[in-house]
Length: 223
Image 1 (spheres, one colour):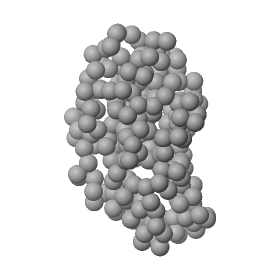
Image 2 (image 1 turned 30 degrees about the vertical axis):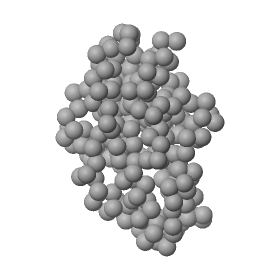
Image 3 (image 1 turned 45 degrees about the horizontal axis):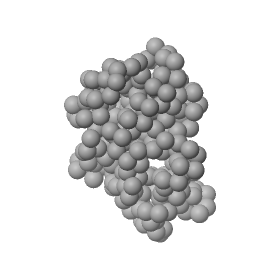
């Protein structure tokens, strides 16, 4: 990979952290408790942010505040129970090291609560890979586009044309578009939160590995 000036903004859940299956299973369990059956295909077809809209899609109606709170609480319980068995994506450490070695810089922007995100990143031993780590703080909108400008400002306001956001959701793609940055979507197949056609129908570059995502990022920044 040739050296160049370029910055990667990484997503955490479902991208660097290989927790897609746990998230899907936790959603299914939470909705089962509420009397709904959620399949993998339904999850991938309906996933969106804000999460309240996603829950309404799965239920086929608008959930009451109490119903939504119960579903989200049960999701958190299931997810937290399974989280100790979750690890980084298979090639996450290699990808982070490769981009640094190519002369690029990196940061992390996530909708994971900041007080949960930062200890997780430190525990994984990868905090030094990033110039800036930013999670969601309350109260804050549940879409990443509401946070990307503050994230880039913390990096010294780089030219968005020199920035690639690598994530796994349509929200990531919309976030990049909101500031004029590039986006590459990492799609893990059966553990992905979205169906693949959510991205291909929009012409968004995709990759099935983080190393492949870096190759696509390199192409976008070098083009």
